Length: 609
Image: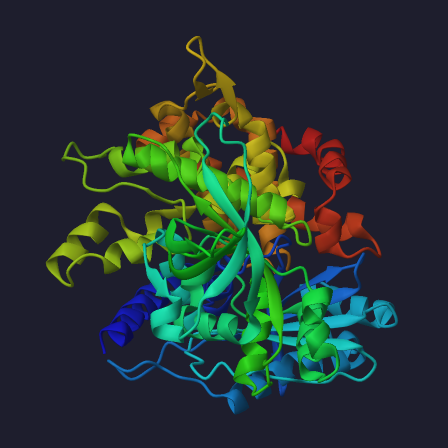
């Protein structure tokens, strides 16, 4: 099948990227974890730990949210050895056993702590579990696998003393579908009457016919049968949530468990429409007819229907449907906005659509935090960075013509989809030569590198989403709007090629420091050590490092090697010692940690030249 081939090509590219990064650090699970997490729409970034793997216990990372009492555990199932030409599949039994390995870390925390090296991250986690056991209300176990879980059956595990346990499977099929969905919104028609033997009836919301501006829309309010919604999701999958900034493809968390429980209860089921806030959706067009002289309209076809809020509801209903729950008599309230964008230029039309849908998404998603990196991916600022990455060649050092460029990934999975759009063989090889895999950089990576160099390692330590938010705040003049003399909305300031070169130079500096820290084979807190080393290097020696020169040479000179090693060792010692009884990873996220590091170590480290 053509779709299977596309999936296999995607998998091969994904695995190749992991292997390329893994060869430099001696571990494949860590870069696989990082690559997978880029798709996972989580505001908090997990601590990716030195993998714990003993007997029937394994763990690769964690997050603890003290305010909610939720502990998230991450476990990697990575295997690059599969039969050529065949999709590697995994079944529910194997995935359940993988999830149980993470569960056993929790249930055996005291044994792990007794035998753990204090210098490694999992010591902190075992200690946290023991100390917070009475406060942990929910454990979410995330299984990240390099195989395809095509049946997508829910997995259930219980942990004694824990009220709620959720198992989330992130397989390659899910990543592939998300990657496809991220790239662009492809027009498609849903024929309610023709394909589903029914229509949707909704009320039209009156509007001011004298309204001015670029935004034009029709809005309808009503309900949709839960069974029809489940069938639509079953048939169309992620296409229905391409513009949903959270891209929910599985039911997750306590809210969704409540939805599923309500649907299973024959008495509560009919109250679903009263209990649930429903869905908000947008579309480009449709066959919509007025019923008589009423305010009621009949919708028989819809173009490019997108659920921008209610992804959790949709996924939970779909999961109940797949589990055999009777959805007859269950209704979901719904709001439908038909977007009518007036713009002469095709690109401007898409930008206006993106802006309008982003605002609808942001204001509709009041129940959940929204990833700013997704909402702001379509700003002119991000588009300009992407434009420079496609046009500026990397300087050649031997007087030959330039042959390659950096590749800025504005949307997740964009690089692999770009390759997939080209003919296998000569075209793909030519693309890879111009844009080597090692030159791909994502928007959240760019933000972390920027924040570290600019003296905010504690922000980078909080993860990509927080780093991106602060990065956008510091660079707001490039994307926030003002009004020009003609009354047009324009950016306050535009970036130029030098700005882009400085961004990439920070990435090159980060890679250089990462390479040295990796070669030092320091145990524990690797990411935090790198962020703090880069920040201290920039703080003390930024005036001696010409970032434009770094761009021209695509590297730092080796005169910095011994200095970086000294700063890195000092950073690791400082993080461990200054944390005291605190969790080192959490301590590294505080501004006080950075300020004290400067106060304690800057004087000594400034004498290294």
